Image 1 (cartoon, chains in turn green, yellow):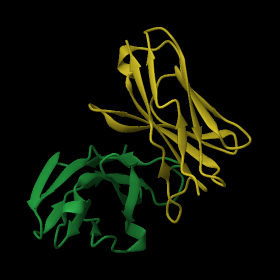
Image 2 (tube, rainbow over the protein chains, first blue to last red; image 1 turned 60 degrees about the horizontal axis):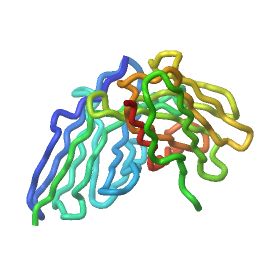
Image 3 (cartoon, one colour; image 1 turned 90 degrees about the vertical axis):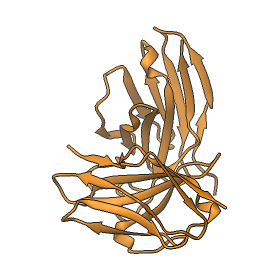
Image 4 (cartoon, rainbow over the protein chains, first blue to last red; image 1 turned 90 degrees about the horizontal axis):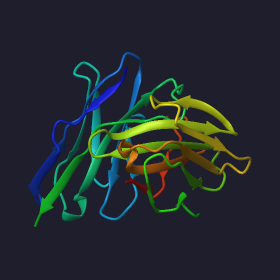
Length: 112
Length: 115
């Protein structure tokens, strides 16, 4: 079975402060991890994926297989970062066709 | 490029009825996945279709079914509706359904209310 846990339902920070959204997973196979974001009145969209090792909108995420975590970080939060963030997992072997397993999501609010 | 479209956007049905939801993927995308989103269970995978074949299925009862047409458009059907089927149903499309390099794009969803 695979499971993604986002322990914080709500997270509030002030503009310019660092932010970290936590994600832990359990998966018996080889996982590939993603962060999706949903801004107000917009669709769910991909923010970043582990395999790309990229930074998007200043966000980065590091896969820690020992701690089974994939936390999302940004050193200086902006008001436009306020959104719902979902951590998601799939099989790295590509056999979970079309399937992402999502966490429950974290609502990030960045105050001015 | 037009995004994933879903129709209708809102539906109200009564218990025992059946419902059909439609999804048009991004042009060129052959994989279509369906998810159910509820406040209690979050986003849960229903099934995935590729080239008119169901390749993957989540843990939902047989009342939930789907199909895909030759133009990659997909429909999902829920028969004998129950109150607990009230949810936002999201459709997502991708080129291949394998996400190491491919990306899944989501539609706006269909809000189903069962009374």
